[in-house]
Amino acid sequence: MRSEISRLLGEQNLDMLWVTGATHDCPEAYYLTSGVSLTSAWIILRPDSQPLLCHGPMEREAAAASGLRTLDFNELGAEKLSQEHNDPITVRLEMFARLAERENLAGRLAVHGVADPGEFHFLLENLNQRLPQLKLVRDIPPVLETARATKDSEEVQEMKRVAQATLEAMSEALDLIRKSHAEGDQVIDSSGAAVTVGAVKSCLTTTLARKGLQEPYETILSIGREAGIPHASNPDETVLTVGKTMVFDVFPCRKGGGYFFDITRSFLIGNPTDEALKLYEKVLAAQEKAIGEARAGVHGSELQELVCDYFETLGHPTIRSKPGTTEGYVHSLGHGIGLEVHEHPYLRLQQTPDESNCLKTGSVFSIEPGLYYPERGMGVRIEDVVYINESGRAEILAPFEKFPVLELEG
Image 1: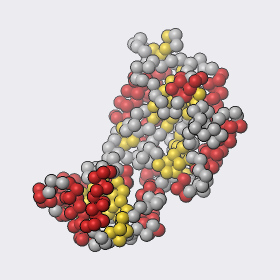
Image 2: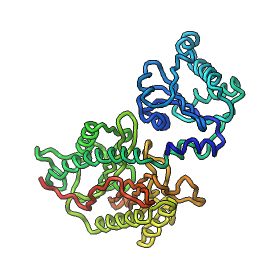
Image 3: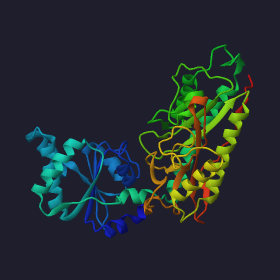
């Protein structure tokens, strides 16, 4: 949580932390500025000191809205330096040198953010030479990653708002299918057109956009064999088919950056086979077992071990019993979610479990077991986002219907 940052800096013996990037694509910058829109920002954190936000002159109002202490880049000579030097690295180096002098920056410095790696590597190499009073270090585990792994009540409420908007969009996409009918093995809408993967995704995207959400990564909608490959998705022109398992995985975030939500539902459209129904029931039972055992103090690897135990008892290969398997249970149980769609804690096998993947009050994470058999043309994954509440118990962030069969009503 943000309230832990100063303590975490002290524990790592860091004198300062420099975050650089635009808030729309740099989670650390978004986190520290409470999500104001800045196309370029430097943020300096020091223990027991108010963070300093350096910003461009055209974004002074947005910077002020962050509530942080602010400094215009032009106060570091940005405009004049840009006129004198054609190399932007030279400009940034001189600006940071002036910032260091102005703010009396010295000691152990860790750096995070989003920038071109080659350019920034060159900048940091020269920074060491220009400012010998600074010692570049690596913070392990990263301070901000650790802070972001637990969410405060305001963050949880915002994630619930994103979740609710996502579920409304998902409902509209599922209704598009429900209101259709079957002709042979194909799903046909009221106009007589085949319902395709692209049509369902387009419906989802349109509704998400109307609700202020975006899909930085492509939504997964897979049918049959592709449903048996965890992150496969059928081409847009694929027509929805009766009697085959489908995996619908949606993971949007706020437009312009912000908190993610992640949900997966698997189902068949009419005419389910006994084999597919049994697969669904096993996956649902595995998820219920994992959610029932999730609580503060439990390590993510313990929940993964539990699900491996369950599936192996039923005769399915797992990544524990058969590492590298492409059939059965082939992935980790879940991951933290927040300003990135994948972050700590991770619910995965670990020979030496570490603190970063231990569940705590404020942890928000997915639980998404699955069973996959691509050569048998089927796969099932069920995913919900869970958080550890003040009592230390797991609670589903945004409950949503689960159904093995989606009946056509058109």
